[in-house]
Amino acid sequence: MIKAFWQRLMDMVAPQACVVCGRRVALGDGMVCSDCNRELPRTSHIDEPYENEMAKLFWGRIENVERCAAFMNHQSQAPSSRIIYDMKYRDRPEIGGFMGKMMAEEFARKGFFNDIDGIVPIPLSRQKEHRRGYNQSRELARGISEVTGLPLMDKVVKRIIDTESQTQKSRLERSDNMEGAFQLVDAAAIENRHLLIVDDVVTTGATICSCVSEMQRSATFRVSILSLGFTKS
Image (cartoon, rainbow, N blue to C red; front, side, top):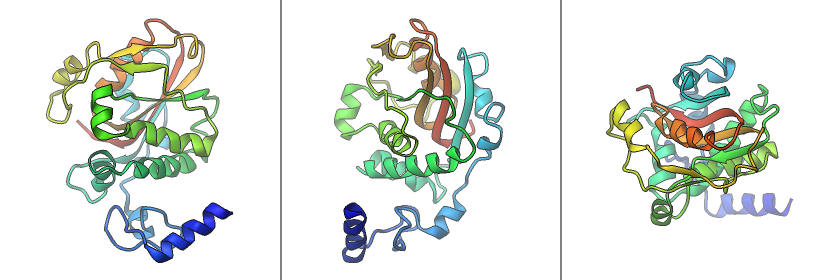
C-alpha cells in the first residue's frame, strides 16, 4: 500500500517515459506504454513450449530439456529492441525486473512454471558484471521470481571466462567462444530438480548449451528455458 502510494506520487512528479517510444506512460502502465505493449513482437512459443522453433535449438544438445520459450522476437533495428539495448547497455537494470514480471504474469497463465523448482540466470563473468554493474539475466530472473514465488538460484553456477561478445559471430564461432566458460559450484542444490534457465536473448543457443552441459557433467536435473528475446539465426 505504502509502496503503491509513493509510486503514484513519483509518476505524477516525474512521469516515466516508455522505454520503446519515449512517450509518457499512463499511471499503472509501468515502463512500456499500453500502445507499445500491444505492438511488442510476442512469439507464440508459449502455445507449444515443447516443440517451438527455440525449443528445437536444444534438441540433442541438452539432456532432459523440457519447456522452452522466448517472450518476443528480437531484431536489432526494431523499436522493441530498445528494451534489450537499454537494459544491457544503458545502465537500466530496472527494465529487467519489469520485463521479468511481465513475462511471468503472461506465461504463468499458460502453466509454464508448473513443477519448476528454481530459477538459474545465466551468469556473467566477474569482470563483465563489474563493468556493467549488474547481470541483466539475474534482473529478469528476479522479476520472474517475484511473480511466481520460485527461488532464485544464482549461486549454483559461475562464469569463469570473460568471453567475447557473441553478436557478430557465426554459429560455430559462438559455440567455440563458449567452450569451458562455466563452472558448476553447487551440484547438490540442483540434483534431481527441475530448473528454469533464464537468459536475455537466445540466438543459436550456444551460451545456454555451454552452461547447462557443464552443469550436467556433475548433476542430473531437468531443464526448461526462458528468454526475453529470440533472434532467428
